[in-house]
Amino acid sequence: MTYEERKTQVKSYLGKIVKIGIDRPLGYVHKKETYALTYPINYGYIPDVLGGDGEELDVYLLGVNEPVKEYECKIIAIVHRHNDIEDKLVGAPVGISFSKEEIEKAVHFQEQYYESEIEIE
Image (cartoon, rainbow, N blue to C red; front, side, top):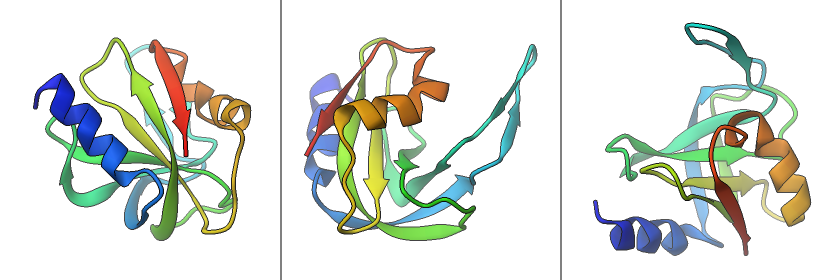
């Protein structure tokens, strides 16, 4: 996938309602070689939609404060990664919004390792 295709793809989801699968629910511990990362939010993907890394397109889910297996949400933002091959979407329950600063704080646990920029709806 080219850079332009990647950007066009994620922008096409902004403002849309999608059903996502959650593979790293709130509280999930992802063990790395030198540390463990605990997910403070639900994190998943849009089934059958491939992102820039060739895996399913990832979505941070905000505003749902319990672990879930799937969720229908509105895509409210894009996390553009400048030093990676993929971008991330940000979803929230329909009718709930978050400021750019709130989104940055919520996804910092993962995005601190990347040069990223938030685009909100």
